[in-house]
Length: 277
Image (cartoon, rainbow, N blue to C red; front, side, top):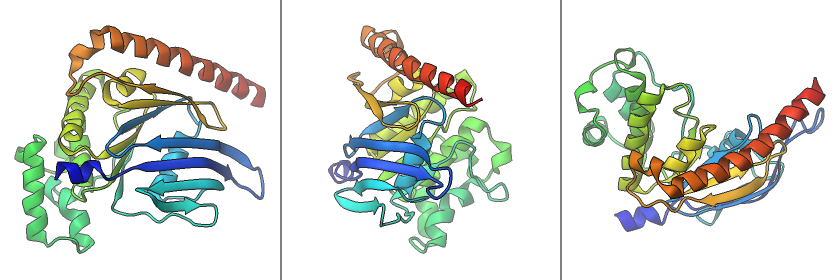
């Protein structure tokens, strides 16, 4: 089963261009951006605010089209300028602000998707959900409501719900941005355990450089808008990882390189904002 999963989720982004309002303001958000994300890779994107990270994620998810180039998933064409992508359960998004149904229990939230889509019976979905929640430390809160559990637990529930569909790609758009540092450390470790166990391809967006290096297999540093890839850092820190790696020489070297590269683009973005004002 592990071999089958590691063969799924290869993403090829080839010379992608995205123009918003092409008939009016023509805002060039992404320009000639190319990435090759291996199946089973934990890919992390960092870059200045508004540089186009979420634009790429939304194109992969099928939320909007692109203005040029191609995106492939496992060798199959996902979208071009002429072909608008369609959202699918093989590409699941976990959003920054959360999306649990407050009127459902944790168990009902986790089982909702497969049941409503007709992929599983309610009994099958509940059996799988109980197994997954047991693995993720959520077994004792199955019948609680989202308002009754912590923010860290809610985020873990959302990831459990996403994994119910056995996606080829898990898309996470700054999922831990609003968390305090202590909660982040717990959820980071949880996400790494999920990744090490399933090897699902992860496309993760963050502004937190420490988070990027600690979690990622590769860190893709983007330029200020219009976005393209400025540098790719290979994070050759062995897995499984824990917080002891934060004091390692390899981690510090990668962090310094990442900070220097991102800072150059942040300065450009700041100056461009001043000119626009």
